[in-house]
Length: 151
Image 1 (cartoon, rainbow, N blue to C red):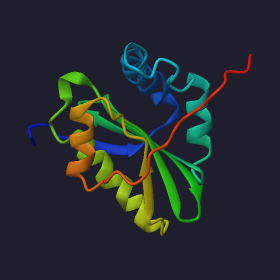
Image 2: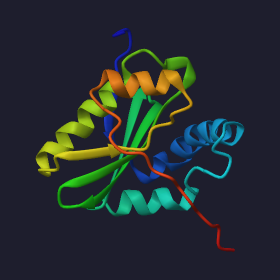
Image 3: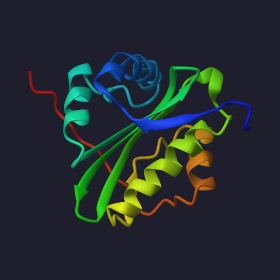
Image 4: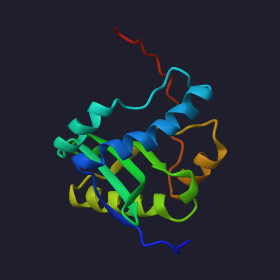
């Protein structure tokens, strides 16, 4: 850890392609897992996330002018936030990038006086579970998701 100069900032419109490309790699993993019906965001959604900072937080982690990670969270109420996505490029995992994204995210939460953050944990992926547990997240509730795609 610590061998890279990591910069974390709010995403800009010019970052959408990089964020979408990185997230789409993880979408392929979701489809291969037991969550086949889950999918990553559409590219045009990121434009709305960036344009609506009151309700959305989209951060990017940059090394040498390249986006190597991102965090997306949705503000659900005045004191509650759903941390929806945290992804780091495979070659840069275990280098503290996810932790840096979270550190900046927590600063934003504190500034907004939001004191409850929820994640939907990938229970089938032990490495992901360990990452969240090591950062103080605890399993509190079990959700059963049901969805329907309207075409």
